[in-house]
Image (cartoon, rainbow, N blue to C red; front, top):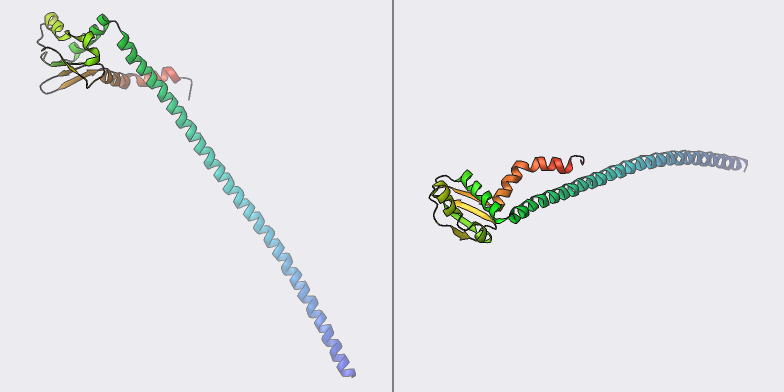
Length: 192
């Protein structure tokens, strides 16, 4: 029995050593696992922080862009109102000044002096007889005027090959092309 007790004691001791080493190994693995978990947590937190910062910047950038678009739209609206007001003021001119304005436009833009003058129905009363008047004053040969609904105001000189659009819309477009940059400077010189 002594031998078997000795063997059992040794086996028990060996088992305890193996268990102790296994526990130590398990603790070591557990400790490394905790360290790895902490490292992964830090890495993940940094990644999430970077993603959040990138998303924040994307949102801020989109908001800045939208604000700029909104400001530009408001500026465009103000500029449109300025030019609309110009047309309103042109239409408010007394008949004599209005006719004089259109007579000077015709004189600057006619090609042969025989073009057909197509007057907007809106301006029939104000511009009726303008061709006859110019014929008498300047020795031209404009035929009797005709009237059209195709334009809202002003007139069109209809030639054999070329038409000259002197409608209020065409005048406004040309005026805007020539003056819009200056108008923008005047209106928004201290606004970015």
